[in-house]
Amino acid sequence: MANADRPSGLVPTQYLNGAPWTGGGRVYCIPSTDTNAYAIGDPVASAGSADAAGIPTVTLATAGTGNPVRGAIVSAGGSVFGGVLADPTNLNTTVIPATKTHAYYVLVVDDPNVIFEIQEVTGGTAFTATEVGLNANLVAGTNNGFVSGWEVNNSGDAVTATLQLRLLQLAPRRDNAFGEHAKWWVLINNHELRIGQVGL
Image (tube, rainbow, N blue to C red):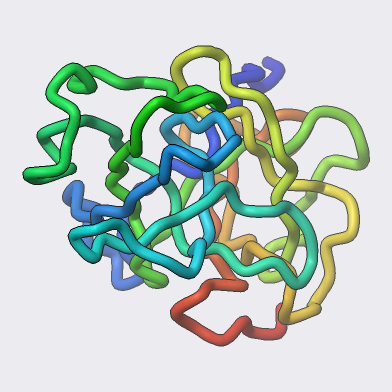
């Protein structure tokens, strides 16, 4: 049976030591001046500033070699994650719009030891078992109104340390197999908090 085409960006699954991911993350601010749209699963990068309360700002990551990633968005909300500066009308946000009237606060999984699941991009030459251990880049995608459309690129995988993801294994699920739209377990290799490693 063919793999389902359901991109959802970077979805945390467990820690590198085998412990399950328990929902932890760190709060970041997307300022009102930012012009990108965001959804759960989108990768972000540090924007080099902070809001008035000192919460660091992030922006949408850039796909491609040499572009580091801070982590992936797992939740967005107003007073839940924004503290005293939050907008109480922003409690059930699923997609953050490109045009913003206020800052948004997101929970980002930024631990470099978290394993994520991500779908392989449509087309190209599908990864096989020989790609396990190599590094690959992200591919930007538009959200579906609920979750991210980002995927892993099956073109250009190599041992290069500045590629964004490390292919750990095919996601161990009965509805998943090598081929188009396969789901992979990956680490963020070119991570802002860890030096990228050469692939195997």
